[in-house]
Amino acid sequence: MRLLIIGALGGQISGASQIATTRGAKVSQANDIEAGLAALRSGNGADVIMIDSNLDIAKLVSSLESERINVPVVACGIDGESKTAVQAIKAGAQEFIPLPPDEELIAAVFEAVSEDASSIVYKDPLMAKTLKLAEQVSNSNASILVVGQSGTGKELIARHVHQKSPRSRAPFVAINCAAIPENLLESELFGYERGSFTGAVARRLGKFEEANKGTLLLDEISEMDFRLQAKLLRAVQEQEIDRIGGKGPVKVDVRIIATSNRNMEEQVKNGKFREDLYFRLNVITIEVPRLVERPGDIQPLADFFTAKYAEANGLGKIVLSDEAKALLKNHSWPGNVRELENTIHRGVLLAIDGQITPDSIVLQNSSISALGSGLTVETSAEKSDVNLIGKTVAEVEQELIIETLTHCLGNRTHAANILGISIRTLRNKLKLYTEQDVIVPSPGNRNEQAPT
Image (cartoon, rainbow, N blue to C red; front, side, top):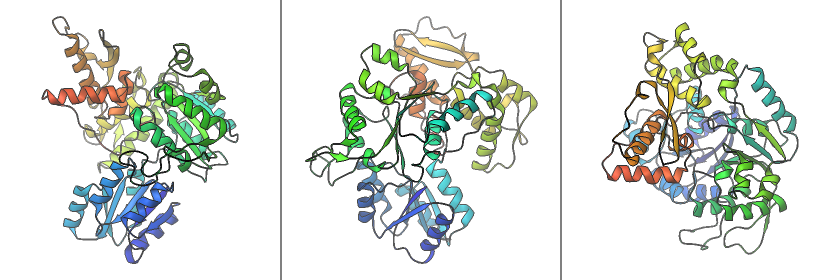
């Protein structure tokens, strides 16, 4: 983990830095917010920012948002100052760490906000075979295409490849091609020079330069605009990029891993993805099996998520009853590991006397399509017999989207993946519903760790 400390590195903050270092974090420091932003713009990325609560946290958070630098912010201040903690959270910090630092608390907070999703829980032989292939190809510099249904854990496989590779000490940088608007994705990937467009207040290095010597994950590559694919092809082919507004090419040394939940050959055939880029990325293909194809993983994953969310919610030890285990084992898991995680998360919150029973588990059993909308989603069994006659396509589509979003605990990206639409389309729909005074589920627990 890469930790950026913003504030004078003395006293209690220095102690927090030492604790983070002993836990394996790579720590860098900036005296003030401008210096911290300059470090981030220059490609010195961070997984977590820790800022002195005496500094202007709102200014930092606002600057990060305006420059589209997605790094969680943790504030720290003297223990006992409750008002300081409240003000820090209101200003945009995700967590507050009281000082003097507590080693276990710091470790827990950093793990939560950085969403360290590097460990893969598995026992099934099919998943073991997949990981063996990932490790076998990790030592090369070849581009890798990781394919599989939404929720199977494609990003976890990409991180596993990076950690087993000679590049493991260099950055692993991920960017979701489906979650960023087309007109912004180019600047996110390749960076820009100051003044190259409105809002470019300073030079900003893109993900390619941030990942130099390391690995760049292009998540949901199939959603990338066709025009931008040509520029990406050159970057992969020549190992050099052009910043927006730049005067010349910049050499980079980056290993590319791309993921997709779509049939890439069909995408190429239909003219939605460049064939030459597909071949460049598809030197090696790793297919992540569906959860239903690896039944041996259901129980260990359920136990892992149970322990995780019981601890995250301060609920003590919670176990799965035998009846609940049987219910999980017999489910078809159309949403794969992500659906299992969400199911267990809800189960933990609904557990009775420290036990998850079948009554604590809400499963998605039958599918329903919104006619004419191109959307398909799994819906609750008890709603499978709902009479759709008399409803308009728009009404059915709205109900479908809201229910899916509720199932995903408000996570827009996950809901869009299940619905089979882009995140931009989903956001436009939700904006319309909000304007119509429809209640739209808000994002749920930010610590939720869900595969892609």
